[in-house]
Image 1 (cartoon, one colour):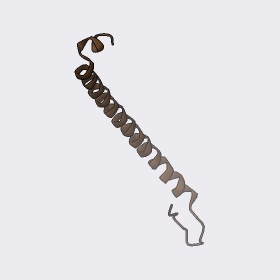
Image 2 (image 1 turned 180 degrees about the horizontal axis):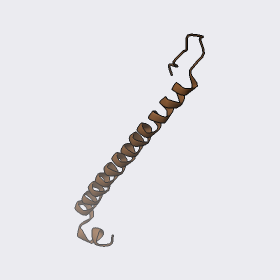
Image 3 (image 1 turned 90 degrees about the horizontal axis):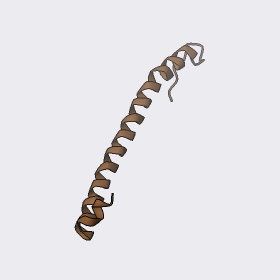
Length: 65
């Protein structure tokens, strides 16, 4: 990651703390959106599997669930 450098050549710790404080909520949001997208896909896959099984094995299979 690029660091802000002072005129003396040292990294500014305040700037680094500021960036990490701003970046953490964005990463949390991205992670939660990813988890929600995965769960939505799993719901669709489960529904499609149930439809395929109902077609393949008939209605009695889906009544057991």
